[in-house]
Amino acid sequence: MRSPCEIAGALLRSGTTVGVADALIAATAIVHDRVLVTGNLDHYQRTLPFGLRLENRR
Image 1 (tube, one colour):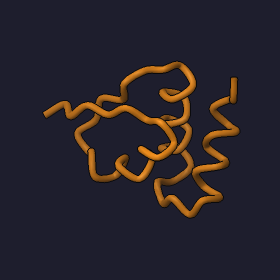
Image 2 (tube, rainbow, N blue to C red):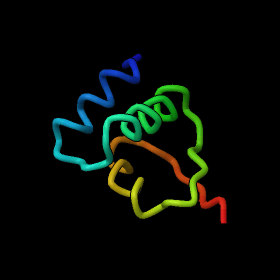
Image 3 (cartoon, rainbow, N blue to C red):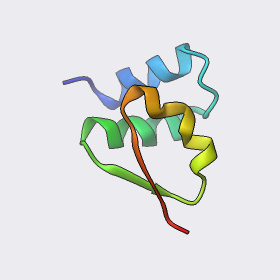
């Protein structure tokens, strides 16, 4: 299993512009196979190729 830090690093190295904190949030959701509930779907759409599942809170 990859750690959240490994996935966040891959996100940042890929040029995915989500910021360090958001990369860690997304990576943690991916590693623990959770859905990330957010009001900012556009921002996190960039992380979908890494396996993030999103749900709109609005």
